[in-house]
Length: 580
Image (cartoon, rainbow, N blue to C red; front, top):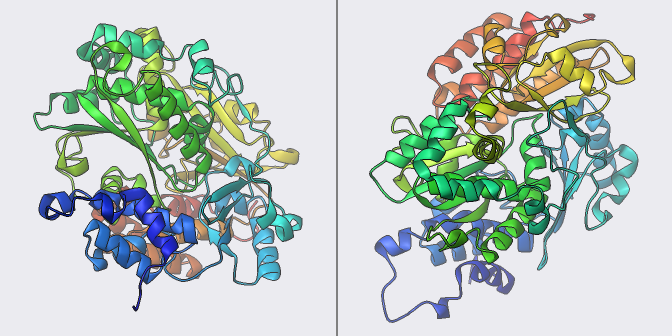
């Protein structure tokens, strides 16, 4: 039969959704029951892609039949994510990052060597892999009955011939973690991230115990009094979101950890998930109980295989020891979690696009209102926070809101994680109180490598802005960066010295937004393409006009911020030939 699935493809799907024989054939399966399976579409696509290395028409047809999804819908979803392929490709594929941090550290040479050694097969260029502290980076994916994903750091051209044969556990290199006040990072390097006992010996689950003692209302009051705001870039008050979901009349409620960390230059959430996964599980449990949720999702970007594995193991251990499930800590409270893998789409970091992705739809943003607290995942009230924001919650509950609020400034409380990378001596993750200056942060990371002259710093990632050396004494707070016309954003601090071709970097940023635009709204779909074209021509006036249109009319933050870095580069004359 044309486009029939193979036995391997059937086995991969059935392992996820169950065999057809397991379904009761005496009753019809349709209507709402069939629609309720739609959320398994993304996991089913992963199952086939992991097993075979690509998704054939026969496999897609079988998935559609099992989940009662129209083929056109499934095709639209499968083609939305860059980690999936509907064309045959080798079982082993190397994804080589050519984004800005890797580009500044020799990715072009690696890609040239890959082209020479492998031609156009067995490898693909990739947007940021979230390993900017180990740039240049690659991800080796080996499909099969026991699929393997190997993150590789500090890849050089000489490594290319052996990339597909790297050790099973991969290779990343030394992890640089530091700062002046370690709170969120205090356990990293001191505990076994896969040991619940280690986590508890270092203060783990004390916050959940206290949260159960004081009750949901008191938990939310503590979060609100701490003045904690979102650490993903939007800086919305966390307590206000929690209160809105808790008070929502519709049920069920959901809680989601947005771990689709895809902003170029950002890797803080990856390190937290890989090195302290139980803290995220505990924080989500506290958030779920406080807001009346009984089920939560951790949506992790597909390029983070180690984070996915460690979170899944942490959830299993927490459930086995009574910290998740039907009777948490024998208090009669229910809450459970599951991990969902993304598949390579920057836009899914936007919260409503993330909802669509979990629901088995294309990861396109929704119009607001309604806001997630009223109608989020599956149309129900939903609390969404990113990894770093969640990691602050146990600290607040155990130490009290006033202790947390006393750190930093009145408008930016607590500590902040910064991803310092680019042409810096010690690329890594640094935790400092809000109010620390940009200069002090850079000094913590050893300054510009090889004592070269600093040309510019990118703050906030590709959606952020470039600042010059005259901004080094800028206090890193939400209020000070806003007044200076820049942003803290997702915590990216990417250095570029005088040896870097900034035209190449800025052009790559423009290309990133062109590729990552979901295409749903015209200002972003067309604007990102025209911006890149105008940049190549050096038409600054047109770039500014396009930027205004995208900022004013795009549906979501991707289009609204797609021109920020490009405009700031023009203002600082970073593209001028001969500029120093």
